[in-house]
Image 1 (tube, rainbow, N blue to C red):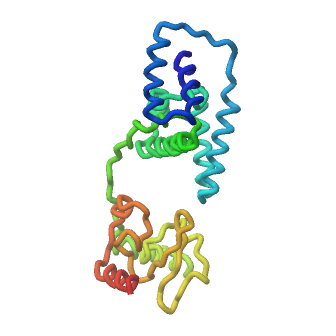
Image 2 (image 1 turned 180 degrees about the vertical axis):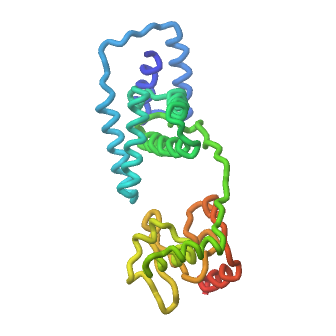
Image 3 (image 1 turned 45 degrees about the vertical axis):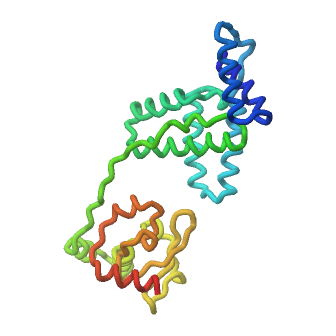
Amino acid sequence: MIENLINDIQQAMLDVLNNEQLAQLRKVLDFTFRNVDVTKKDTIDSSADNKSLTDSFLVAKRVEGCSDKSLAYYSSTIANALAKVSKPITYITIDDLRVYLNDYQQESGASKVTIDNIRQILSSFFSWLEDENYIVKSPVRRIHKVKVGKTVKETYTDESLEIMRDNCETVRDLALIDLLASTGMRVGELVKLNRDDIDFQNRECIVTGKGDKQRRVYFDARTKVQHLLGHQSLDTTLQYAMVNQNNVKISHQRYLG
């Protein structure tokens, strides 16, 4: 209860004191209340305030251009964390979130990648709260990125590609297999592709990737440099093995030219 009281005092002084002064105030309050017992007068219903702040965050992310799918993921991730911690947002500590992440992993058997995705969303949320002066300092600051092993995905052999092609029942299926194999585009990008996006003369097309970012890909090669493949992270790019380096070079020169 003392911790909550001190947090309330700090929040009230946000517009008056700088970070150094707030830190000094914290030391003074910790010392002053060291032998004081405080009892809660009435029950605080934190659910309404938590939802209000979460909704404001989601509005801000929507304005920044986040997709509905991303917003839904943010919303459910934050709601689950707040329900489990069961505290007003302004009272949540780093220990609360560490315990939550640990318990979530133990109970659900989630992968390290999933846990780090949750950490990133909570970090974005609490950093926004800090920037908007709803809290003094984000409790996620000292929760570091979860270390995840890097793996290189095995590419299929020329023989495997021919087997897939032989098993295509329609010309359309064959076209889809060849397009995926030669361009390196994602399946999610392929399903969005329209005929108007394809330049059959120059054997290239425009695809729309994550974040509604558009780029050109070519029919004759699965490209190697990160920008051509369209992956935001180089770590992601390195997971994709390429087949024909001569075609990679040709596609690169065509892109730069």
